[in-house]
Amino acid sequence: MHFSQANSRRRRVLADDLSGGNDAAARPVVAPPSRSHRRTDGYGPGAKSVQQRRAIDLVPGTYLSAGLWIGAGVGVIVALALADVWLPSIAARTSARVAAPLDPAAPGSLAGWIASLWLALAAAISLLIYSIRRHKLDDYLGRYRWWLAGAVVWILMSVDATCGIHWLFAAAMAHLTGCIGPGGGMLWWLGCFGLLLGGMSARLAWEMRVCRPAMWTYLSTLGLWAVGIAIETTGVRIGSAGNVLPAAVAKLLGDLSLLFALGVYARHVILHAQGLLPTCKRRRAKEKPARNSKTVSPTAAEANAEETAAAGKPRTDLQPHIPFRSASDEPEEDSQTETDDGPSQTMRQIDEVASHASSEQRRRIDSAHDAVPSDDSHGKLSKAERKRLRKLKAQEEQGW
Image (cartoon, rainbow, N blue to C red; front, side):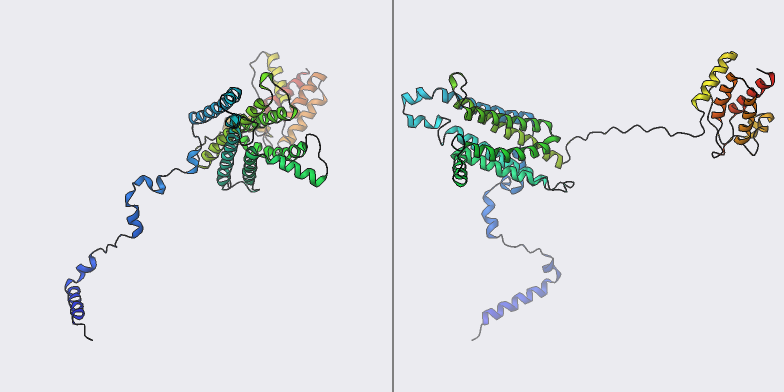
């Protein structure tokens, strides 16, 4: 079989390529649009993944947004409380089945669903904190794993708020141990869950200590939960409201407080990870002045002050020794005391003067003795020290 048309087409294409030269190679090759590209032509740039909100964007970043969260939550709690107050009139006008979702004590009530929703959001925020905190460089012990445990606990509490699995746990423990306890096994779920929640809450509160508002709000959450459980288990009636509505309100306030505390701490973690938190300047410790072995002792300075006051002369404090001093700055008689022995000869001279001195003079000579540097320092006497020594010699010669 011969394909004359196909062969002639190949010759024409080859001739065009040869005649085009480098011009054909310089032309950009445009790939045909793929099928996936054609499918996204109907969406604008806002549909791209880079334009979508991230999980950290849902955390309230300002006090206004956090206040709106709290205001909305408190409004929901007030609406549920009013619905429970008007529950008898609603049931009288309609039926008990219609008014059952408004009863906080009924299974599957609206209050239980709200509590379950808030606890589920708390678990999601805990997972968000865990995903950021696990990248902290100085967390060598892996303390960020406590936030994963917190998320698991909030999920269990969310399920319990809807279906009440704590009674199932109490019945199972009573059957396994043969001990029911007071309240139909209430002690089992209170004790076990109290230990679990208390240990984990202590650790989470310690993690939140760097953000004081979050820490104190979280501690208030534990207090509200304790009040709600105490009202529910003890049967204390608060006025005409009884004990069901106050217990439900206290629990809902605790759930809202938990959500707010975790939101505030999540904001702190996000800002810390992005380097947007202000750094606190640490105060430097005051440096102690270095002690100079050649400085004049306080005893010698006091003795010099007493002598100058008695002589009616202005006070001149003793100055430390200046190592670089030229010989031209001092008289010749001063240089005679600077022998090779240095301080040793001066000590002998002071001892000779002290042997013929009175008790008052001995006290002054002892102060001068303390002012003379030791042999280990190998330093020269200052001008004030030499003047002091000459004065003691003159007093000894005059006999006073």
